[in-house]
Length: 324
Length: 271
Image 1 (cartoon, rainbow over the protein chains, first blue to last red):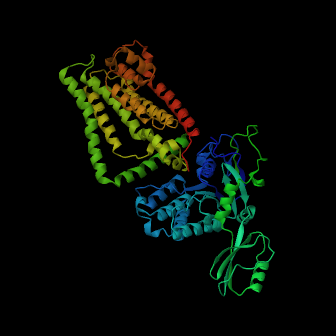
Image 2: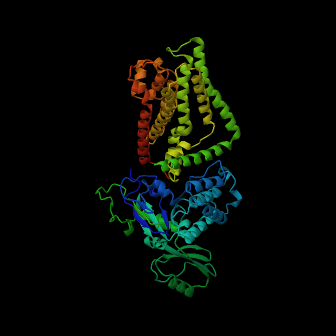
Image 3: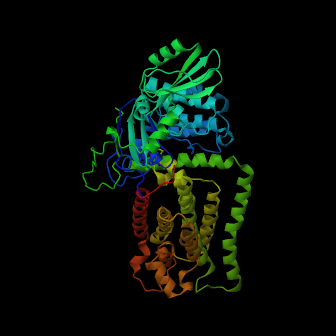
């Protein structure tokens, strides 16, 4: 069985990249190949200049990994014990270790539970502990596999702002797989979408919206309940999709400007308030998954199989994650 | 090479310290299990004493001689068990996905699996085996030449490496068959049971198989024949009494290669 097929991408130092796709699309498989856990059956992978499988231990010193559904912490011991072990394993200089631990304790608010056995921590607390563990040794690259899964709103926000801060302050490269598209919208400048083991989109979050026929929505509050709004001919495709008393919803193509539409509506009706809603990224991604969108330019089957063999049936994952 | 080895030992000891602390988090369980382990391992030697209560010799071997075989085999076995016996839980790590987590740490996976769930309790079994060995040495009626004296620690060390190699090979096999740990036990715990007695009591066919197929005869039997000044029932040349370290080294190389192949073929679990 082929989990991923002819995936090719390059991530530059300091980028924050979202990696999304439905269950079983090959996200985790990709991350496991990038970290040296799995050996690809064909193709090239370079991470921070290293071959992940052959130089796994050396690579482990330069990357940090968080698997949202699995912990690397010592279950029966307090967080501080796990952190101390990592200090020794990674040979982190004491001064640097103290500095980092202090900073992370503050940013992630760990102080209250640093000395409690991990098994007694809540999921959100444990995740913050795992994040710290993954970053104590100043990795150049961090992989996060569903870091916000199962977290409450407050913990999610804490995790996101922490990642944004680390990326901004230290230039840490971040690759994030998630099912939570809020993570992507709030953190990632670039998003890659994988479906059926193939890369179907690689580009900006905004570009993702434009790629499928996404629509924006105007929510119009009228002074009084009225029949369906009388809409102008521009932009084409604009239509009322819902009426609820004095409030009406108008959908129009995401690529069109809202200005002429708003002008026309306010000219023809007595409007109390208008608000604009961006296309729901969930909806965009759902369409992308279903649409069987043919590989975008970035999916680059043209980059082909870098191993030089002609067998197209093998994985050709090439990732150059430069960290220098 | 030396630096790598030193670093491996350093990492192993770090992990052992972590697991020991974790074990101590459950103090009552720790104490009860220590007592239970001492009782169960103590029964082994009680079984030997019971046999000799009925007969002065077992296949022509005296009590101190059988205690010597028991002591050397068990010291080697429990040393290997203490250091890396938990590698036989590899299949569980593969299924639970915890092996992934180990591969993310900057340390050899084998060292991490070996140190996994370490508890100081395991050293109690070594202490019990060493006690029997020391008692047998004081009772044995052999002329202690330098070569005999030197062979005793050497055979224990070689025996520990042989058991360790069997454990690691068996663990490597679990990358392919995750439920194979029971089959592995037949070779490790079963092997230890067999080599506690003079191998000649099992008959020539078994003796032959334990020499040439699963070379457990080199754990203690062959060198012990020299130490005890006995002829080899199979009539093998004198050199065979001294090849245990070479056999151990060869098995260790096979185990290391098997392990490496296993990790390369590791398939992980979903998500």
